[in-house]
Image 1 (cartoon, rainbow over the protein chains, first blue to last red):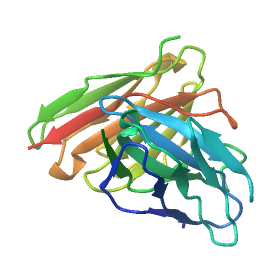
Image 2: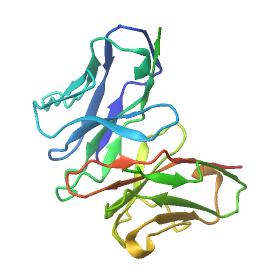
Image 3: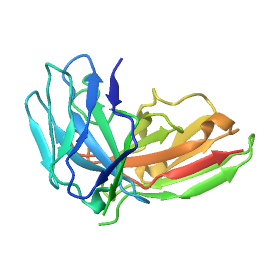
Length: 116
Length: 113
């Protein structure tokens, strides 16, 4: 079945540090890949996505590239801010869901804390 | 535009009791989903509604869980009777369908003691 493995946290960084959160996946077929973020007290928000190999998703200074050869979708940001403190979830859509993104498989989440 | 709202935000119940969680999707979103995150584990898909019809309930863990969406608007998820392993955060999401993004609510944190 489908699965997502992301680096376990927590991750603690100083402001302006470089961030990488690793994510690898297992899926049959060609899933779309996502990063969701959950800020304290809020729901999950879509951060970025990529729908096919070599696509790069980007938003709010975050980037991730869909690497089919390594089945990876690592999240990066060049300079984190205190406001980036949140839980980050890597996810994929079920390739067999008939062209829909509804059935997501999530990783366990990575808690990021950025200190001033 | 109001987002997906869930009620209650927290619920603490004893084993064997019944709890009903409610989700109000974004207006106009025919697609509604339930997910849950059990402590320390992944967020897992429970089921999917299109309007009032269940499209996929393959993630429902057992028959103690009952989801409804009468009239195709808000949805409820009832757990009866609750067990300790049902503790976790229950998320609702809605979308326009297809490749549209899922909009998640803040979740309901359920604690069964």
